[in-house]
Image 1 (cartoon, rainbow, N blue to C red):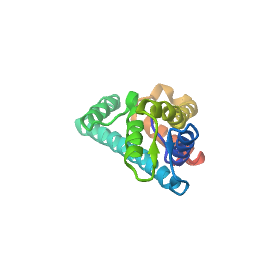
Image 2: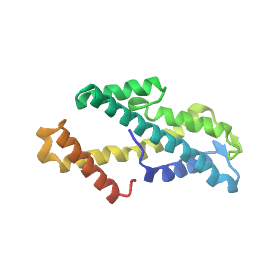
Image 3: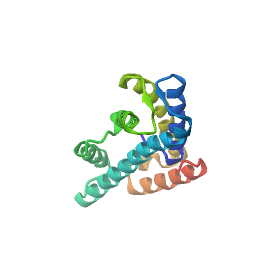
Amino acid sequence: MRIYRGKIEPACQEILDRLLAEGLVEISGEMNEEARKDLESVLSEYSRMEREISEAAKDQAQKKGLDYGSVGRLRRSLAKERAFGIDDEAIDYPVQQMIEIMMSTPHVDEVFAQDHELNRAIVPILRKHMAAEEELDKEVRKKLKHLEDAEGTVSWEIEYQRKKEELERLKRLT
């Protein structure tokens, strides 16, 4: 799962709104924006690291002469080496980072909830905003239906990436 740059700010604002509404945290009014930026920094860094790991996996596969199917395995291996959560842990990792930053930032006055309560409040919001990638993938694949026999080939990957970038621009996700 991935979170698009265009989804980071709204996701973080929604998270803060929910945490405040449920009384899980206390933030002085003037610190609300700074607290949101703290959360945004977590998701931005997560997104950057995810891209870095994906690119490194593609580079390794290319250097070793491996097929495109090996990229996922290499990606998981690189993420494990860096103690970075991807795939099944794609939500857990940034949520834990968000909880840690809320505990340590001067922009959050008080955290009243335990980690599992914060997790329960944050996860559904992140899932909703991260689902944009899955929806985009389905839409791209639908548009490439005529090329489905070529899936996994370099030409299919190029066309997939081109169509995906086009839809990301149209939907203002980047």
